[in-house]
Length: 69
Image 1 (cartoon, rainbow, N blue to C red):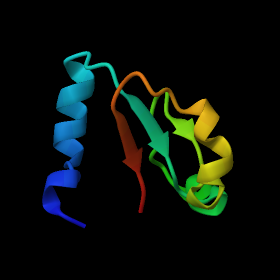
Image 2: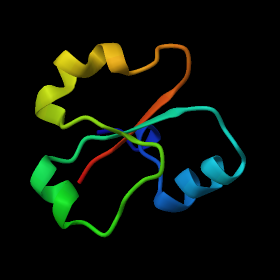
Image 3: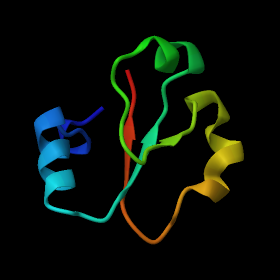
């Protein structure tokens, strides 16, 4: 994946702190999500294997950032 499509955790925090309007989706599988200490505020939980069926839940009017591991 090209580097220009990735951002760092620090960049995400900076964008959140600046109040940037975007949709954050958490694409981790349910087991990874349950075992993690990382919970992203206001993120839509959409496991990557269920992405297509969840597309209607993802707003199309603003940028989308995905968190995956």
